[in-house]
Length: 439
Image (cartoon, rainbow, N blue to C red; front, side, top):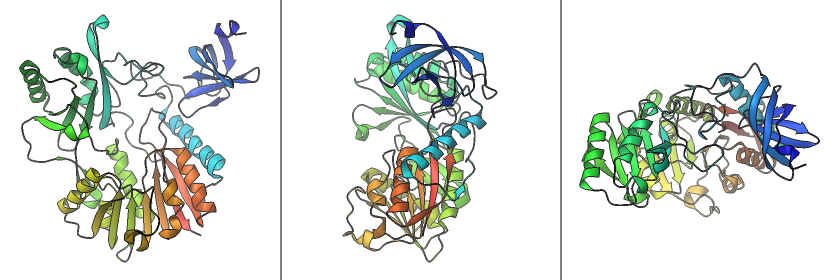
């Protein structure tokens, strides 16, 4: 049996996972075929056998789905950055909407009263934040710069990236040549990239000291490409500006609708898709329906992406975040935008118990934008806050579904609406937003 399963096979795909793997039922066992779509007849070979399922490599599409298109990127199929370039953008959103629906129904046992249309924006060159891996490979005669491979821990041998914001999309080979020329090329494992409205920053992780020649090369590169270059020799607190020697303004992005300018450091978390972020913030502010009489809590507030626009509408806003450096940056952004009705504080949101003064004060409206692990500890204590409306921004449909179930069945809320946010086109990431109201 094991030998036979290493031979090429043919099957029809009857379902698809959120990350673009087709599912075929063969002799009662599911086989996941990367890159295959529902309804397609495909030729494949099994590569990994598990107890309940097998994983297979797609060899040939015999009968193609009408939703299949030609991938735009030459590295697609090898690069782990994108998994859905072979699918029309419309069908990508159908797949992601189905994933959200399935999670809400299966995990949370909830269904929204209204399904929101997908929040859409640019499908290419949208990514303003990324971490590029670096590896000097003498056998290839070059330094590889890019994302990890889909099925292996190696760095993809690539020359450009169609989802990176311009001009970074075409800078892969330039970075490869630059790093290959440095004495520390074997001790430079990654580059953080950040595209702001006013500049572009690269943060080079360097594990050994640079020589004078290295520094001259980095300076010339920054000058030629008009970049800010930072060095990170240790932890995150070691990041420092290298070129130019000084700058007049921090990196920033704008939320024009609210006349807000948000400054950030190149390693700070910011939403990767600027256009989608504009739409998402607009929706969240409108959905909360805050006015001058309302107190709003923004939990997991980061550097103020939602707090500051909300302060334009609400009477008072409190942003709460566990990372002190982000809270400091949020406070600076409030002053930068001359907002006196918003405050920020550091707190471990997994440990609130109701004795905190800011918790006792309650709120009229509440926004949640947690990490992938969700907000289980907060939603289980929602009775401490008693907001009339909640907007939950999620980067993981499973934890959103879990938390939605808690809000509905334990905290007395109803799920008014929910839908996907197409923050990462061509990838398997499912971002979503949900609105809850007090029953």
